[in-house]
Structure formats: structure tokens, C-alpha cells
Length: 360
Image (tube, rainbow, N blue to C red; front, side, top):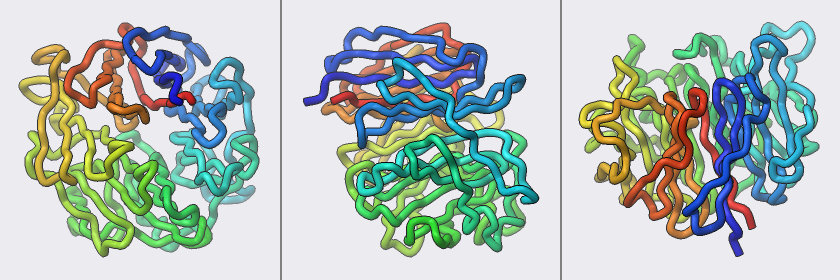
């Protein structure tokens, strides 16, 4: 039986954990954890029901990977990812930490800048570089995204196949491994890079966020720089599902844990990087992007808010809870599948990421 939900919020000045029972009617705020440190991402390991990870990137004290084995009550500093001595890259930041497949209970993945993938086989305490991707023959075509550096920010483990892993790089595009990370191939068929002379290159697309379905194998969804796409692992190309959205730009997007045809995105104005008129909203599709519906009941009318790439997440309850955080420091949540929203937390530092833990 599900006992409750924790929302893990990474901000520019530390992390916060918001906890509630399964009713999700009252939230208790904890934090700041890692006070003053930019926290790019936090994640929860549903395999053991206890482990949490935090990607902390302090400018002065240096980056740290923090690990908890008691649902965030206490934390231990783990080793940082590190490139081999003499490698062209030097580790700067951890962008994303992703628990591995249920069949590989000790494996955890990390995406870093400069763009690289690292693997842990001891539940996130030490890391080894995945050189088959880092030194891929196409890596010389990766270029810095809007953050000013190349970053591997999305890791999508296929729920049905522990050997199938997809990653995304800004700006390098998506790559797929079907042998547990031993080899990789560009996985960008059908996606566009309209800012390049060739708008459909093999690599170089600016993926903003990519996820896999947590229950149904082979299902992937991405929010690209200019469009949104669905793909099944057996398909030859990504399906463009942009039509029906108010803009073709945005950072945040996620997939519904109960239905791989349902997804949520927060469109932004490309020039301003803010919600377009008539203000902030979560757009939902229930038919794999054939149609989209604006949902904004309870959200501030006309508010031109900004949501970052890791800024939206769902829990695993039914009806699903949907949560997003804004650069202005508010967390908004829906406990009824997006029919209505209420403010869960306010006046936090600028929010970089929102993720969830559904507690058994």
C-alpha cells in the first residue's frame, strides 16, 4: 500500500523535501538541505524504497554527489564522477542521477558536464566513465547548449529491458544503447535542429528533456528545443507531436506513470523563456500527442512564469499527482490528474528541478 509522497526540489540555494500522506492535502516542508549549494537534480530509488540522490554543484566548495539510505533523513557524500587521467574532458558538474533497472539493483547512472555518462555498481558511491559513449565517433559534433556547456542531462532506462538505455545531451541529441552501455548509436531519426544549417542532422539536436515510461517497456517521450516527440523502441523514427500546443518551445515535459500515451508539457515563449499569454499552464495529451488540452485551474491567471528542464514530475498514485516548480520559487501540485492545481510551497530560491518519491 502506498503511504505517501515526497516531492524533492532542487534550487539554486539548496534542496527541499515536501512530504504528504497519500491524500496529498497537507504538505510538510523540510530544508534547506545542502544550504547555499545549487542542486541540479534529486532522485529516489523505488527499487529499495529508501535511497535518495542529490547532484550538488557548489561554486566555491566544488560539486558533490550526496546519497541518503533513509529517505532523506541523513546524507553521505559519495565520490564524484571523474574522467580518466589525461582525458580531454575534466569533470565540472553532475546534472542528473538515475537509478538503474530493477534487474540491476546496484546500478545507478549519472549524467555530467562536460557531456558524459557514468555508471555506479555500488548504489551511487563510486563511478566509472562510460567511454563507449563519451568517446563516441560523433562526440566532436556536440556543442554547448544554452547553459554554456555540453551536458548529459537525461537518462531513460527502459522498464522492459535492462540493457536498453537512452540518454540525451545538449546539444548533442539522443543516443541509444541496447547492450547495457557497451555500444551506442545516435537516436535522432525524425527530430529537428532548426538552428543548424542542416535541420535534420544525425547528431547535434538540442534535447531539453527525455524520459522513459516507468512501467511499460519501450516507450519514450522527449521535449526537444523546438518540438515534442514520442517514440517506441521498435519505431524507426520519433513521432512529431507538436501540433496543438501554443508554442513550439519549452523545457519541461514528463510522461504519465499509468499510461504511456499521456504526457504533460509546459510551453514557453522562445524569446522570453516565460509562459506565453494567457499565462502558465500544464498542457496534457491523452492520445500520444494527437491532441493537447490546456489545464490551469487554480494556477495564477496571466502569470508569465518560467519552468526549467527538470521542473515537472509525477507521483505514482492514482489519480496521478503532477507537480512543477518555477524559477520564482513556487511549487504547484495537482492531486487529481491535472484537473486542478494548488500551491504546495512558496518563496523558495529559484527552482532547478522537481522529482518525486512514492513511499510504500
